[in-house]
Amino acid sequence: GPSLNIQSFHQCSSLVSIKLDNMNFLLWRSQVLPSVRSLGILHHITDAERPAKEILLSDGEKADNEDFTMWINNDGLLTSWLLSLMTEEVMSGIVGVENAQQIWSSLEDQLFPMTKEKEVHLMDRLATLKKGSLSVEEYVRKYKHICDCLAAINKLVNDLDKVFGLAR
Image 1 (cartoon, rainbow, N blue to C red):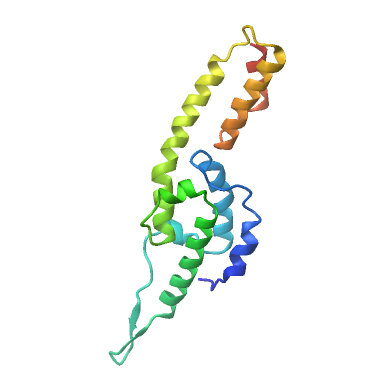
Image 2: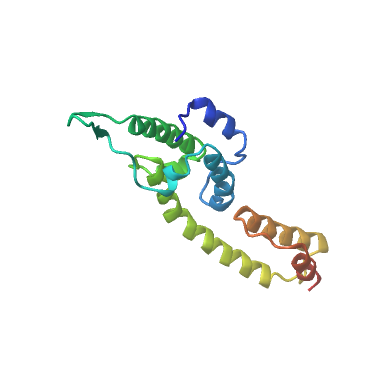
């Protein structure tokens, strides 16, 4: 794999425009994953395996494995970078994790269910929103706000559905 340094991640940081909070996991993930992939280290978050610390030489002696050293370096940088892209609230929920893969699976376990729950709630709000006594401006503003909230969790409401929804 590639040997990375702090600059590798510094350049990727400009591509992530939001900090992870408890409600924007899917949007955040959609910005972070391509960066991690472009650095050639996606396996650090998708795979729990790591290279062996030592290798056995042909004469029976053991030696430090350079792949392990590079893995530890890259994983440390990735772990620090991921933590820098989170709010303190999210960070406090993943105390005790030691590497990037543990962080990633902890985030998915904790935040993905919240995202699904939020999606169901928002879709329900969208379906039941009535103009009633609201002014047109107020109705459109509320409708747009729910659509924006759905977009934040990567559930886009297509324009045609918006037109039909608003026309109800």
